[in-house]
Length: 399
Image (cartoon, rainbow, N blue to C red; front, side, top):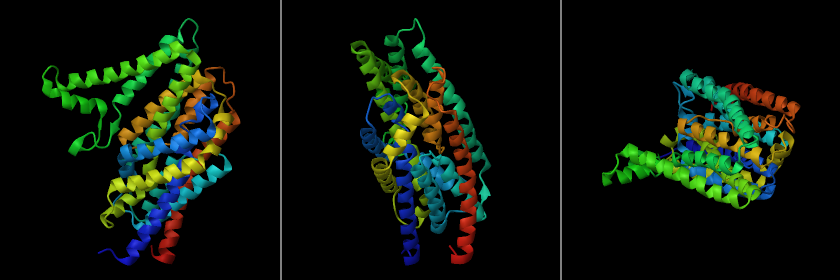
């Protein structure tokens, strides 16, 4: 039987987690996926906030386990986070993110939560998880170069003379379809856990004997890619501008789904070590975190959507498509690896890349500098505050 004090502390930690989920939904996961679409006038700010909330909730439930487990158990070694430690880490990170939301500057949630959890873990006497840190920092450092570079190259391709968008846009849609076919979802892997649509189809079709599992996997992946290319090709053939905007909305939806799968782990990850004490299944925790993201997206995201769409760059449909494709690819890579990643960093880097493809028009260098400094500062500040606040709370309150 769980002691009353332990249960009460867990409730406080859960409330802190819910607040963190709201802050994330109002900030990174709620604002970034549809910001380029709003900038391209493909969707209104309020409608974008509504849709991103629903898709983020779905992503949290279907793809949230990897990052959730990583944040909860892989950021520090030698110790297990207590309920009090989870409260300190979550409140420290959530307050910093909320300040960024209301100030109009995108604080990198992944930096903030990671810093807070590591700071608290070190204050508990834990050991640094250097191998995990290397993986995380590598992705963080590579994201601006890979995302921005790929966005720049894609935007240049779409703007190139002599290259018809009736071919390039469907080809890009086929690439996106290939990525979708290999996204992993909870439940598709049966007893083994998550699996992609292509892998699940290959397992089911292997018994036919025509192709082996690898052959069916390749065939299923190509089929989804060709279907995506055909649909988008029909859209742009019928009406080029309208077709591009439809494709952009699909990309925004995919990024919103991926954001839910990644960002929910930042909100509920610190609660994972407590599940051994409190009998709460992980899927239930994912639903709770997803609802927090949903609430944040519906109530606080429109402000940040407007900031990203209008303050960073004035994007048309082509440059917005160029920004969203690498963003989706990086997001899914992070989900698959179980690495907490900042969607502000992903989208802002991609927006800059696509903006410079048009000569840098509409890109605010001053805003970019402040944003980068906010990212670095949020990591250092969260780590220091997490360590200091937990040390103080331990000595005064004995948490």
